[in-house]
Length: 439
Image (cartoon, rainbow, N blue to C red; front, side):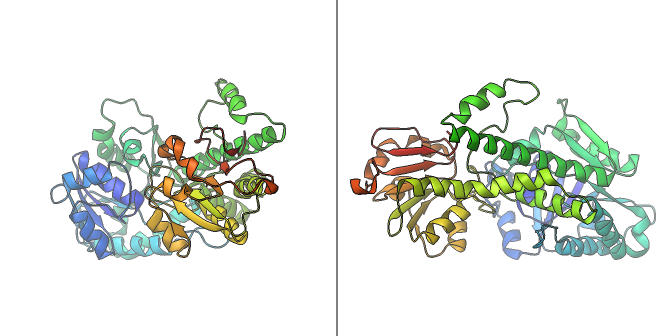
């Protein structure tokens, strides 16, 4: 198939590369000429394992990038993957997506009288937004609107494993109003799903996007419940991980998402839960459980800082922050738990030195005045305390690097350099005043 992908962020770039790898001819469309140039050179503007390899393999062959919408009218399917940022009240801003949808419609105004086209919304939008984007496409298309169907195909990609998630999905959801559109999507995904028994869920477009929101809201709530239980365990001196290992044996609970810690971040869970809360309130419903999930998550970084306060006054002291990305495997710092941790340290007048394997440059834009180390060992060198915020594998193997930390005077009541671990990635060892967040 000939496929156009409008928008080249995390979702759009992954989608374009993976569809090209599945054998489709793909045109990536983006307004940013620098992003377009990078894609045509086989490079991603984001850090995502496996993505550069696909881009370098298919750029100039099955995959090309452009700032023009000319390819749309000659293609079979157009995906809209424009970002939908949050408004201050948590609702989503459809401005950029609506503009791209209308421009896509304008490109499709030249459809032949006997031609049909499928526009697929892959951006994350609430159910009322489907009608808004459909209207924008049809408004741009004019008299060709009756030959354009707008469907939804929500994404369930995890940053850090997006390529693998696309290739081996747990499910694929098609939100369509016709058998024709569903068949076209099934044909598009056939080379991806061939030989697999992946469930395909067919629903109307609005139900399909609600599946995405409910999916993420459930996982976010599970994380917050586990963190809340972990906080309770900590008050009794009980290791929450031992408790969670046991309850995970229950088939009704499962072992997934039971690692308590400093909370969730990223571009999906916080944004999607906030959008669903705002949409529910617009309908007159108060989503109390979702509100509680957000409250618990927002409180975890402060609990981490309070544990630090229990050991030492960090005013004027060098404090290492290990991990800046919201999760390992990505350079994305959006809603990273490192942000409130660093803000809290600065409010305590600490001297912050931070390290992350890949997210330093993104963090530098947010915190230009703190120090950034070139290694975890460099961050620990001379630090009186360290806070572990992201569970990068390399943090589990620091060992002797902690010997370069400094202990404050015994009058401060500290038995050694302080390590507050928010991800259970560092091993307890002699010579450290070690605290796990929920263990």
